[in-house]
Image (cartoon, one colour):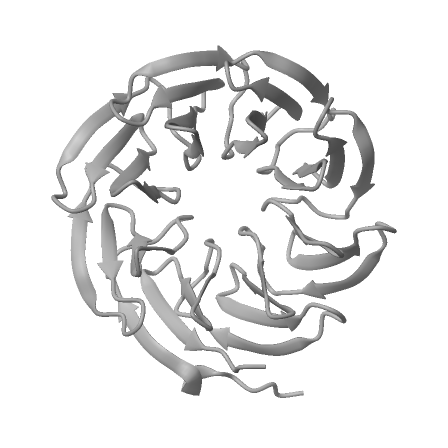
Length: 325
């Protein structure tokens, strides 16, 4: 079956000329921010025109945080910049002997940073000074989840923690597996994956409520809504019924799924290392359309004003118009 491409619905395309790693496009104050390895590009999301650029000393792997008219930018090799969004001046720099491997998380007027040497930092957003730090002793590769003033995070050894806003470990579980995705929450449950297993745990005491094993490794964080849990496992995207935990459907691509999908208007949008943007129906998981990008994509699509914006590793950004249902 030849499915329609929506290339005719491409509103705009921009070639940045630099590799994009895992950083996802984001919109703040009606401006689109796209990070290549060494620059942050600010575009008009309506037409893709360049507004300005930020040159960064170091390699950007993960998505910067944009808030309070500032850019908070993690650099792989141990630097973290706070940059004024208007003047482009560097306000302060936080240094590590290790590597930053995840995006920062916000908690009140501060930031949570985690490092490859297993230390979780809480720092002041204003000046970058350390408020506290806790050593989890294993590499932390994922962004912390903040829920009800508590912090949830896992390490590469398969250990999952709930930490108080003051830096005290409140509970811990071990999955017995290696690796850990970013955690997400829905109601009073926390969801994450370690190696080939998806877990649901209690937000109160970390107790494992249930777990489900898949055939292949789960790399991206799950996506959970009222009725569904979407899981990227190897080259496939699977949808589970949130109540029964049964797999409703599974869609296989020709590459690996590295970034989380996005649910919008009863559709599922996701990319794969095979270089395609895929759009499925949320219910039965049927393919509505797919479109060939310029290369593999390891970053999450962005939905903005009934468009989907997606980047690929070769440094191209595309904006597709979506049909109004």
